[in-house]
Each structure stands twice: as structure tokens, then as C-alpha cells.
Image (cartoon, rainbow, N blue to C red; front, side, top):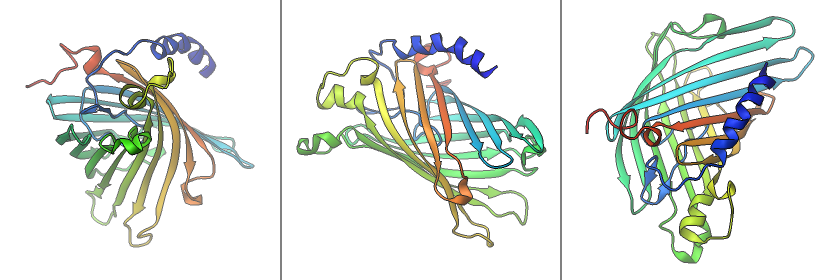
Length: 297
């Protein structure tokens, strides 16, 4: 079944992959285009829709696997303020205990992009995410209580570095700091934090030096993510789990495709390397005069 879906989707993906990309209006600070990354949330708000597939197979005498399909969407009410929604469907399989399937906790949030510095290629946003208790399948471990997660999100491009180090100008970083607060008494929260390092061939070719890269390579951005969670519970205070996700994305005028590995940073984070696959649509570029523009200007 999975192979059949891949064969059907491959011609469409290849068509998107090689489409020309003359211009767009998504995720910019000055000349810097910030792509949507895999597991570290964007520092900007826009009209967008994403599907992220996360697949991990755990080895051992009783192998088990997890496949998760994450669906994310955001919609601007004002040019720099909007709402975000996320949901995920998960399949858990085990050779001994059978399988479990279901929807995870539904999430809704808001984000305000309060700083866009074009000269210094910087973006900063404040946001709040709400994971609504009781909306997920209990067999997947979804909680019956709601969790509130306010956060600070940031992005910074290095295009303002001097020309003597112009090979570093295509570099950018993004990140977040986002504690979570359960609404049920007695439950402890976590500190979610993370950052990304990016090297953009788009920026290199357009603004630093044309080295003659052809399609599709000139539209690629190398990304390494570090999504982390630090426990705030008294029994595990300060203990951190997470992954390192090296990958690559291709960004066109109206879509972005990406693939990355998911490598656990310690034994508590997992024992196997996973795979992340991203399909992202820029709704603000696909439908600039309707679905892709703010409700209020």
C-alpha cells in the first residue's frame, strides 16, 4: 500500500520539484528566505499547509515501529498575526502486542510576528499553543488535560556579515524557547527548546556568488535541526531528550519538499534513526488574492 501511494505521488512531486521559482512572498526578512523546517517551529506567521511524515523502526527481538502523519496549517488574520492548527495520526506496530492507531491531541495556537528587521535579516515572534485535553486516542497515551505552551520564536540570517567572509552569508539560524504548563493540578511541565542551522544555496546563488548550480540544486537549503525537551518534573528535573535532524529542503514558488534523518541524542530519546519527510504548501503564494491573504489588512 505504501509503495503504491509513493508511485502515484512521485510524478506530482517531480513536477513540483523542477518547477521554476521566479519570486514568492513567504517567510522573508529582507533578502533572507526562511524555509519551514521539520520539527522546530517557524519564526514567522503566514498562510501555509504542511504534511510531515515521521517513521521510526525500533530493532530487537520484538521489533516495533511508529509512523506518524503530522498535519499543520496556519491562517493570518492580520499581516503579522494569525492562528495555527496541528493534528497528527499515528500508527504504532509491534510483533508481540499488535498495533494501535488513532489521532493524537488536537492543537491550536496563535502567533504574533512583532519584529521583521530587513537590514539584519531578523525575525522574532511570540506565540501560544494549546493542546486540547481529551481530543486524542487514549491508547496512544494522549492526556485528558489541556496543556498551554507560550513561546518565543526567532530567526537570523548572516547576510549582514562583511564580504571578507561572504562564504558565511548564506548561513541562517532559527530557534524557539517554549515551556509547557499542564492545566491539571499535580502535573509537571516541560521546557521545549530547539534551534536550526541552515546553509542556503538560494542565497548563495542570488546574493553572494553565482557558482553555476542548475536546477534543482540552486533551490536547496541544507538544514540541521536540534529539537529538545528538558523535563521540569521534580523527579527528572534538568534531564533532556531530543534528536539531531540533518536534512535538506528544496523550495519553489509555491511548495517546499524536504527529507531528513532523525538521530536520538541519548538512549532515553530512542535507539533507532528515523526518517522525516516534508511536503509544505505556501498558500499565500498559491492563492494570493483569496485564501492566501490576511482576513484583515
